Length: 472
Ligand code: SF4
Ligand code: SF4
Image (cartoon, rainbow, N blue to C red):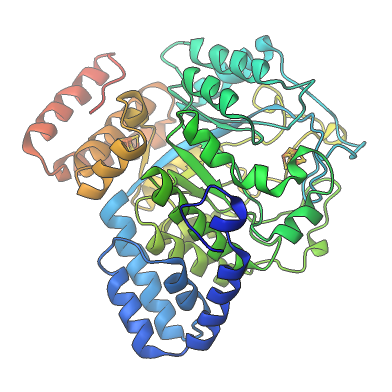
């Protein structure tokens, strides 16, 4: 029985409801009266339901697709302006006892180098990341209770926050580790994490079990209910993700929106972010084994529809996507990207030799952070290193109500400009600095609130004079 308020995975992600939704979408995919109504509702920028989103996804009309893209761009602009939040993944350990068939870290893969960073190695990685200019990290680790127990993760978070190299510091650590207990989520909360991220991979139970044949991750319900436990443990920013290309994309798309609706129904706050990774080549993994690969044009439509369905949720794209694809997806809804990423354990200090491959997947966008920052600015975006909300306690529903009120523009925009200024002063190349200074001078005038604008201008001067870490 479908019940978005239930705490049971099979009830809030009811297979029956998804099948009904897909049949409804198929039956109505050319029902223009209904489609017009859905698009009108979507234009109010308050979101649409999983059923409505499914109809739009199924609709074959190119004209409707153009309207979807147009609306997604408007929503993106309304809530996120031209800011793009920057982050970097940090791989702590690739020891893993699970058997995920699409991931080279799976326990049975014997030709991958296994590594686990010591606290000293983490220190060196973090300094390398700070020297690039990063302020926001997402730590990643395989699941191995012996090698990577929760104590190791907690100690690593403490190490990361404790390092202040030159003007650098990591101000927000997001965590992407395996589903765990309420007690462990509470410990993560106490350690000061930002978002807890856990990819669902697929919502289709049977396929999920086939893709995760061994290890604790095999348990579909335990994995799917993880966000509820995280929220019970006090973490109010959670990040969802489906690995597109694993199963029928339609099913996962609907499941993902139902998951967001469930979190809102039970906890009063939807997901903080949604990541949209696509399956890609990696050691021991052949993409051709997955017959459901999502082509680019369809992927664009999925991203645009997520933007429309959950307007207040940030969207993240990884370095798996090419520069061209990232450019397109930024326009349609993505609000956060990684820059200068290494997906191998210890990869920021030392690029590893090919024969010692410990990377989780191949990186398609190999540019440095400086190159990515410069590229974004040339496209008219403001790269932001802002972490203010989390540090001001604006998480969960407090963040969402600010976002829904539209007042976030008076925080995000000046914060983006001030953190970009820090980046330009401390880390940028000559060319990037020149482009950035011109951009800041122009953009600061667009901050709507006069008082905020004046303070921000003064702060920019103070940053120039050597001060750091201002925020609204
Ligand atoms: Fe382990 Fe995660 Fe890879 Fe699965 S996806 S094998 S849990 S690292
Ligand atoms: Fe994100 Fe808050 Fe900063 Fe805006 S002010 S960019 S929402 S952290």
